Amino acid sequence: MEKTRKSKKDLIYYIAALILGLVLLIGGFYEAVTSRIAAHEYKNSSDIRDVTAVVADYKIRSDDDDDSYESRTKYDAKLYFKVDGKTYEGKKTFYNEISKGDMVTVTVYKTKKGAYKIESNGSPFDFLLYCISIAIGTVITAAMITVLISDDSKKKKKDNAEDKDSA
Image 1 (cartoon, helix red, strand yellow):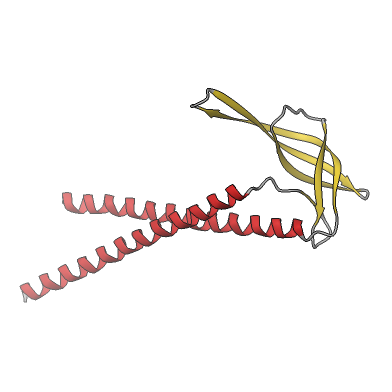
Image 2: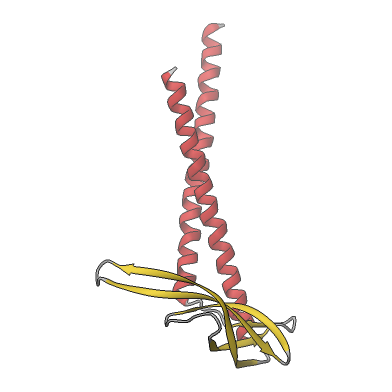
């Protein structure tokens, strides 16, 4: 009885780890691809310009650094900007204090579809993190699939051995 309870508990942990691995794998792959697409789109844009945008809303995030006892405040802003008479919406992170209604200068680029987007805040370090996430997700997923398959094959062998002994 206790063995079945323990094996059910282990199975739940294995499945949770498998889901975590899949989330890391899929999330890392998605972010890596979208960041590369955005970078390629920006690089090949036919129109890159600086425009004035209005801060419509923002959220404050604080990154505390334990080593230096400093906190770095980030402002994730929702912006509206006009290009050629058409209004667009975008998001950008600022490291200086902003408030609703502030006018800020942002770099925008024209996409293949003719719309304008705000230049991405992505960096090569972010791309590296996405790749690391893919690698860790792959290892966790492969390990959990191997464990789950090997548990099933062990149970089948054990059941077959018990059936032969009883016959």
